[in-house]
Length: 426
Ligand code: GLU
Image (cartoon, rainbow, N blue to C red; front, top):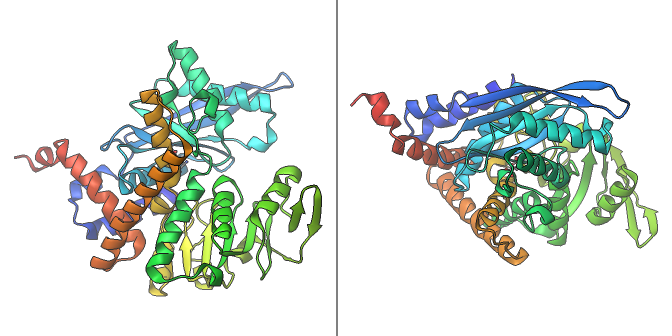
């Protein structure tokens, strides 16, 4: 099924039992607005290439729309809309004064030189400058975009507007008003969610084997923090494949080595001395099917499907990527008692600290790292409590509980805006 249709079907399924009116669910069936734009980019060899770009503002009942911009060859209009719908739910679950949005460019960024990447990023902001804004739609990083790219986009926006507007985009470099702790925020938030879950069900870190798919920003930080807390990281992968070791890996070493060589190797490094550790090479598909206590998909959407769900052996799945488990696989997992800590809660640390960045920019008053971390912890554990309570009292899977919390908040906002009276005709 198409990713957007799958996302809609999940909202419809969970929404039906959430006690929100059909009018509210109708309002979430399509995005508020989508802008598609051609970005002509001058390449280093003098030629011009055209890239198709999107920005979607899905729903703004709770506040300005918020969400990242993805650079990936598989970006599509439907994918951007699905991601923007998930941002709408996510911001509501963790109580941010934001709606949901998302953007994307169909491009393989690894093929571009740094200067081409800068021209593409500036072109994106030129095309979107009237669509985004500090109180309308606030972009941020997503897959294959980073602080540097956000800095170029902020600069382009400020050049167009002829004023400083750091609050137009989050995840910026610190020097341009970025927040301390934003780089690690998605991974840290996920770690805190897993920790809360472990407390509730009595999971012992030392007895918990973890497989992490994807060693990007979020995957790296969550794996690093889990390992520091005593969890055994027995498998990791990147887009080219994975490695497995029953003893567990030292995440920092793997990551440093990957940064230097651009390839994932089972290597421990101390200073400049690196040594290969015993391991088994595995594919990304095999990683998903490992016999572990916790599976952490931290790469792309749609990796657990009706096709492989029967072979998933993990006791729990923490969705650090957006949408790694497709809606069509939800029922099979809950029937088998596999607990899914859903993306809309588990990876919300990123947008929470984006919100902190936006607040700091609007106040012109930067926070310390301790304050950022402390407030992230308060907010994510508060959201976890609210979701867990619904999970227990209403006897629904954790994902359904999170959606119920989010949908009810969105419903309240839509109804407070006056929609109910309008539709009811009274
Ligand atoms: N791209 C991230 C997400 O999917 C962060 C969005 C943001 O910070 O606005 O949650």
